[in-house]
Image (cartoon, rainbow, N blue to C red; front, side, top):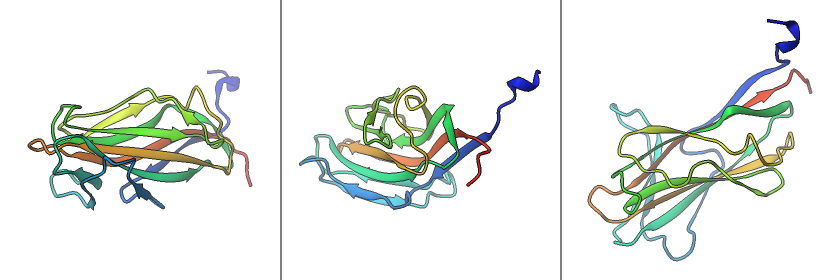
Length: 174
């Protein structure tokens, strides 16, 4: 390996576990009949998570939003920029799902490489998008939003777990 191919810096991960720090919870219109609660997991899954359930037959949704500060020595996003743990009660998107939105430091919506996610086992979704588009000004904030949606179908519920934001940093001090 030539000396010129060695990166000047290291990686960095910001891990968010429910309750996400400084989280804001809100409805998006009239489809928000249900209950959102945070769980400390159990001895089997060991997953801290948000769970959304409803008594309604039509999809009902709720949002959890948090802001994360870009480090002062931010260089770029890692090849797998976002990892998101989730689980739904059923594998059917028509019964339950989770999704994510990301707003860059300029307040612009960043197109992400995934849409609605459903699966009845805890899964880590590798989400792309910010590595190829968006503004990420050091010492400024991005906004991460998670949508939980469910119906009253048997076992239907949406569970959002940890989020890892992965980026590369420089050796720049200060």
